[in-house]
Image (tube, rainbow, N blue to C red; front, side):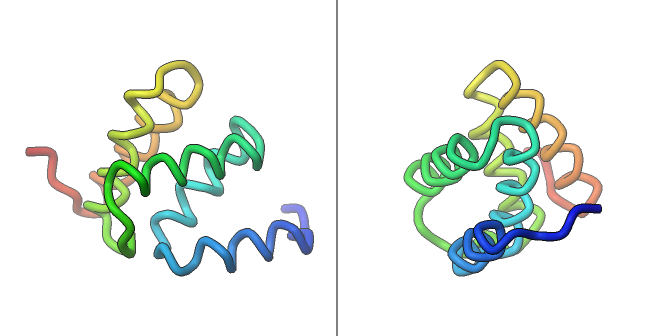
Length: 93
């Protein structure tokens, strides 16, 4: 596992006010699409879902739904996060 850079730590701190599920989604997105695009996607999710804390599995499920609508590689990450959320107790209505 690589050590976190100062920029990674600053981004995590900046996102922490959105909650642990937003941070988790961002970390997964960074691995797939890079830090700049990951931040754009999280900001887009917050704009659509409302500015709130994303601390619960259902919140991760909501973020995943937003990402799935994006298509492409982001859609794949969204599906992965959706499964993760369901395994943590989220409910698919």
